[in-house]
Length: 200
Image (cartoon, rainbow, N blue to C red; front, top):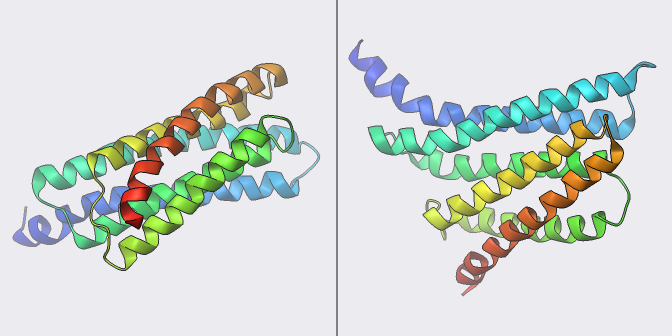
């Protein structure tokens, strides 16, 4: 192993993992666009089902990168200024993509009256914290913020899973979707204290 690899290549591993999450967010967003616009051949339903399965698998990969990029960075001292803003950006892009996809998969129904306000609040929180971080008012994510992100990712996983279940049973899919709403509400509640702290 050359000194160049140790000092220039290995320290980029955490940011590379974070970048994988950004790519996954765009792929999930692409699937949401396809399904929203009903693109594809006559067997589009089968293609959309395959997309939903792929999205769930990719989301699991994204969850692993979210779990380990920070751990690796701190353990080996590979923390960087780029990683401090790239990591929360990746989380926010992934959240946007997953929530949009969930909205596309379940375009109507009473459940959206609860889903849309919660997602809107989380989106506003994300915009505010991103701007504060961009202007140097907020540093690296605290352990509370990381916990909030973890809860949010659980909610996203439930919603994406509900989309897969829908092809087997629409009623069961709605049950899974409803199970995700309290988790989403919990993640929104966890946003509130930090938002108030940032705005002081």
